[in-house]
Picture 1: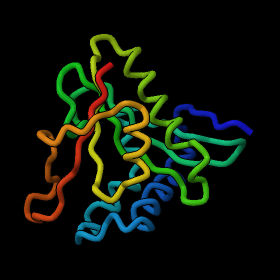
Picture 2: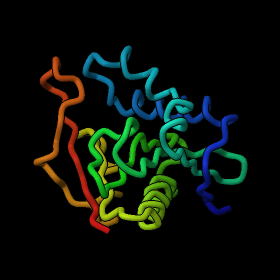
Picture 3: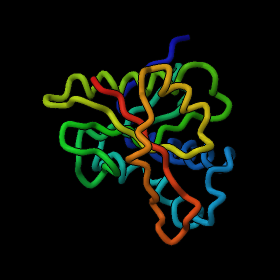
Picture 4: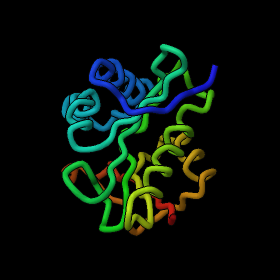
Length: 168
């Protein structure tokens, strides 16, 4: 069966929130003492959908993962500047990894960015330990932009998010 990418529907928000939270927890990405603060954000797909386009990867009836596409600067963006779209909260269920869902979701975001008037680049932030995601980004042509790396929790010095950009 083929993986399909489409906009998430409200009935999927809870399940996608759980997939996203579990992806971070199972990969050890909330080891910085921020789990209590950030876990509810990861689970809140409805809030992401209110400010961005939330896409899901499905195979038949199975929800494999999702991502938020932010068309430009605004409340849903962390680092997007004018002329840039941003990818946020890419997550694939552990049992669905290695089947192409993550790459399909990123490609769908790139397609949306190319269709967005005035958009010249796509940016994203990622944690150092997200090696599988880094491989996807680099395979698709994203390049590291270390000058834009940033810390989302200033009181914790050991959290620095790495940034990538793809010029369209």
